[in-house]
Image (cartoon, rainbow, N blue to C red; front, side, top):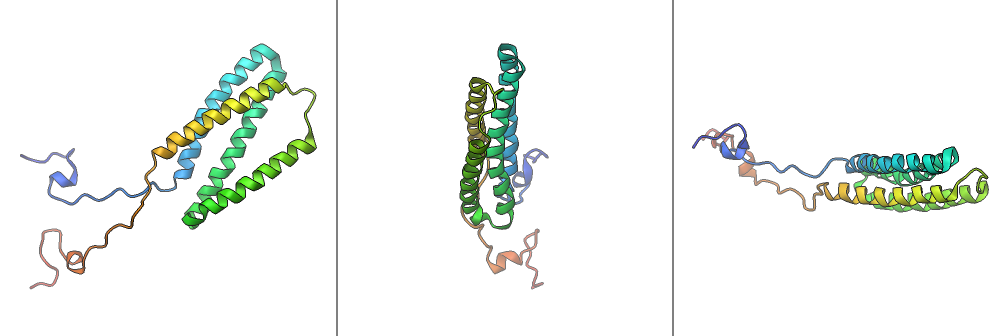
Length: 171
C-alpha cells in the first residue's frame, strides 16, 4: 500500500511530531468572547431601542461595553504577562482583578447613576453579556492545548542518527 499525501509523515515512514501547546491562547479566547458577547449585545441593544428608545439602547450599550472591558482587560494582561512569564500569569490575573473591582467600583460610586440611564436595560445587557462571555471563554479555553510535561529529550545516539538511519560518525 502506498502512502498518499493526506496520510502525513507517519504513513510515509517518518516520525510524528507533537503539535505542542497553543501559543498565546489569551488573544484567541479574547476574540471568541468578544465575538459571542458582541453578537448578544447587538441583539439586546436592538431590542432595547425598539422597546425603550434611544435611552434604552445607550443604557444597554453601556452595560455591555463595561462588562466586555472588565473581562477583556484580564485576557490582555494574561497575553502580555504570559508571553514573558507564563507562571506569573495567574498572579497578574489576581492583581488585575483586584484593581478592576476597586477601580470600576470607585468609578461607579463617584459618578453615580445618570438620569438618562434605563437601569433595566443596563442590567439586562450586563448580565446577558456576562453569561455569554463566560460561556464563550470556557468553550474557547477548552479548545486550547496545554503542555503538561516537558517533551522527552532524545538520547545522544538518537540525536546523531541521520534521517536515512545511518550514523553521522561515518563508521
